[in-house]
Image (cartoon, rainbow, N blue to C red; front, top):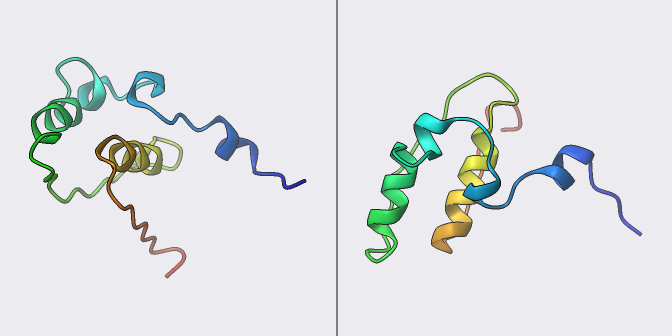
Length: 80
């Protein structure tokens, strides 16, 4: 049996379950509008998320990739 860290287990997988950052993912949010407009086109612009730890940067990037069914590549200055 493998165990994942609790934050990984509890991480939301969809925008509907993403809490906070309404200016990005809310009804009128930038990311929400981009997702709606590009789903048919298959193109999404490159984004750089910046903010303090725990603000949802990685989670939001993973959700966007999942919603668009696109590959996701994670880069971190801490790990590279």
